[in-house]
Length: 156
Image (cartoon, rainbow, N blue to C red; front, side, top):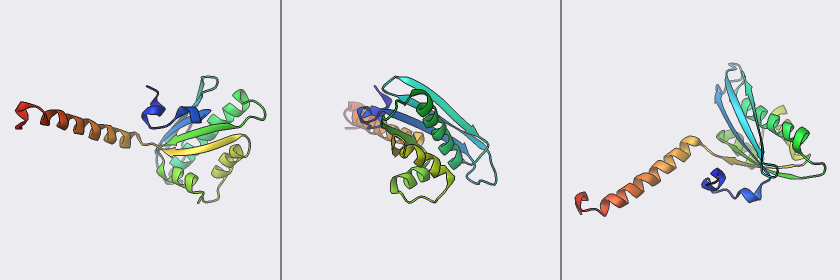
């Protein structure tokens, strides 16, 4: 099954998807960590991976997204075409700012805004691997309890 469908996302609503994940310090004065982003172009079925290191997590996320979009814009995009792009990130603060429009002015947002003004309709969604695992574990535990309750040895 398509992983986007498993997340409750209709992949036909998008032309591109970018999944980004970063790990490191949130303090810009203590740069450490790394991030990667994978871009999938559903129209061409081409994939691209990008990354960034040695800065704070917010910058890592934004740079890896911007690098993936830059690659698409320069190598794969067609002139005068608008691309519907889904960005899946586990950075809750970044996604919240993007969705609410309540963003602090910064060059990071300026980079992403450039793509928004040049052929990319960015849609943001928070996805946490930990949250997904917890949901799956809870569902599995519920299903197991249901099965066990229906058996003679469960004390019914």
